[in-house]
Image (cartoon, rainbow, N blue to C red; front, top):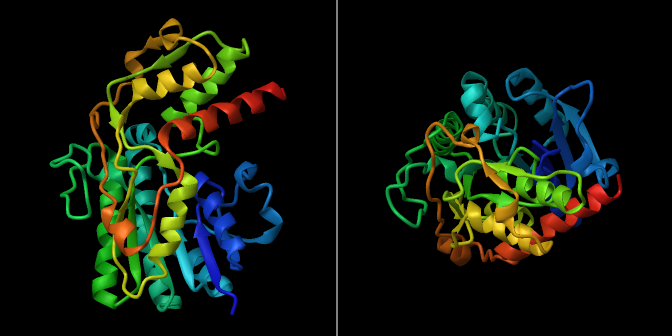
Length: 321
């Protein structure tokens, strides 16, 4: 029988890759999207005719209940959030509403309307923040260092709370940084690859950056959405860390991106204090051994391959203009 899936944040990077995956598996895919004057459809333009869209908002529980009634989902993937860390400092209250309270609204709508639906919450490695152990795993205590990280901790624990209080199949994927050509331009990986492409094509002459020493565990979003799906196919709901187990500095990211187009990054990078976070997260490194063992999940795209893929995509995009 065909399964129904409801995805919030379907037009984002993760939502688009997840929608592709579920459509390939024969799901009927419903996408929740907010009413806007100019819908952002670039990431799902190629599959939009295969998706049924439902208008709704995480801050409006009535719309969520209606969306669940309409989609009758077997699986709900809650990917929507205010997900840019820098913006969470500028709009902390909005981030709390969307990224924290929005999870409660979605969980409660599922509980009231379709309690047997399986629920996935997009948790984040930013919850570990000022890490208390390395590598970080499912049992590592959280120490968030931004309003975004704090909101994600709330979303994570309210998911655990609903699972334990109402016997719901609700789980969280604690995903470390995952990127792709569909990543928003405001994120550092895409900012780097897009600017490198523009510099190579003579459209720009410098890349302004903040802290080059910060270390991250970067993987490919297309690999990570497979883990989301696998979590909801288990007999029991559990939370999983999804990560590569490798860490790279922002400087390494910059070096690989410029090197891919035959340029020396030191000739173009300018350090700008305005891009330094008020409270920096210095090192994130995930241990996904539980996911590898229990889910059978595995990494397919490595760091350098990912960066080069993104640079090539941005070169192609800007060459068309």
